[in-house]
Image (tube, rainbow, N blue to C red; front, side):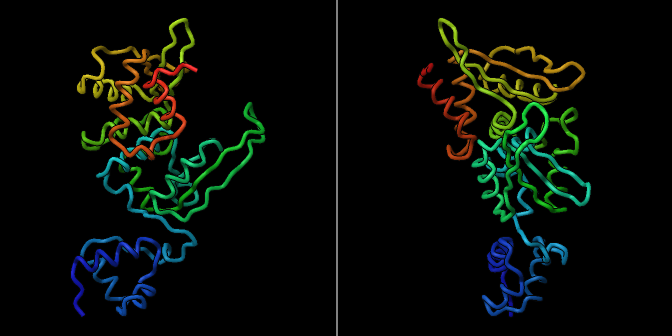
Length: 276
């Protein structure tokens, strides 16, 4: 039986949802070996025996190419708040405060992941008693692709600007902002909003250069070091007009249900000049 490329891609989309070639064959009256051969023929991802024995599944190819605003946004968020590790197997992980568990659930949905999001309570340090949530996905492919996209192990002090197309710079920067930036109200006689971006000097320069090129700002702000001895810097812009201009530009590049909700709501307050 001849299976066209279009048909193969259709079957592969179902396969990537965690359905085995054996089940696919039964669903469509096809030989499982023929399906696997066609996947290989057209350069489509085929799970290893190790991966076939998984309890959980995800779109492990998601970060192979950054070709959508959604992927660029999540890559930026992972640059800020995610990590990869090769200790005891290659995996990707992310931990967030329990108040942002819905955002972690959103990432899980985008990855078509069935991996669980577990919750924990901090039992030591100054945050003792606080709750957080964590997603861990074990996958050689996901790990390798994220490393290729610049997400290195122990990346905090060494991370550099991404190698992505310029059309995806804005959603990537928005992801960085949601992961490690802030927007807050300065309570003065004439209240105004501020925004902060954080990262290495290379990341900060990347952000500033983009803002200049897009005419979102007309001057360079001097970044300041967060902690002496670290390579993490902060970049701040203040003023309702400039904050609205920058954030409107970033938010308009993605669907409004994608960004972190609590920061988006503060942006709307800035836009509406609400200072409560």
